[in-house]
Image (cartoon, rainbow, N blue to C red; front, side, top):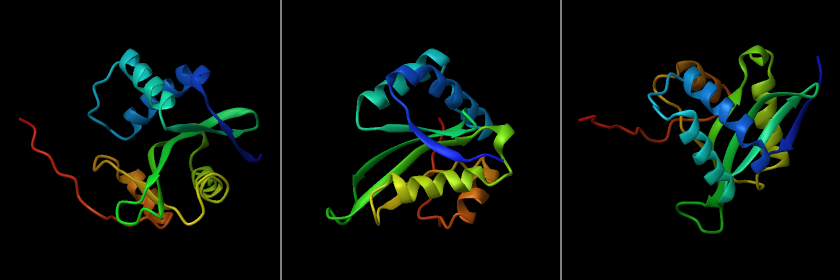
Length: 148
């Protein structure tokens, strides 16, 4: 079955990260209209700043990725938060526990000890919501908008 490994991504990996970001946008039924070029520039900007990207590797193949950053907790400056902006397990690797294993590896080997972990799940992505809830995540707030 293989073993899941984490590998830090860098600016040389922006092309692959952008392709996977496009896949994520499709999979979660996002309304994001950004072109490949726009997503590429945005991903470059993330990695140029305080964001980190990590590939999830199985049998020397990229099975997914996580894009996240550490920040101070909103209420307690002595507490850390990790905001996971993007997390994807590619379709061919789903349903075998790799997503769960990847998050556990990040929590126990990459994220600061006792950090609060935050995610956003689109309403258009019930499969993603079910996954995150199965990992113990609970809804905290509802973000609403009015398109005009």
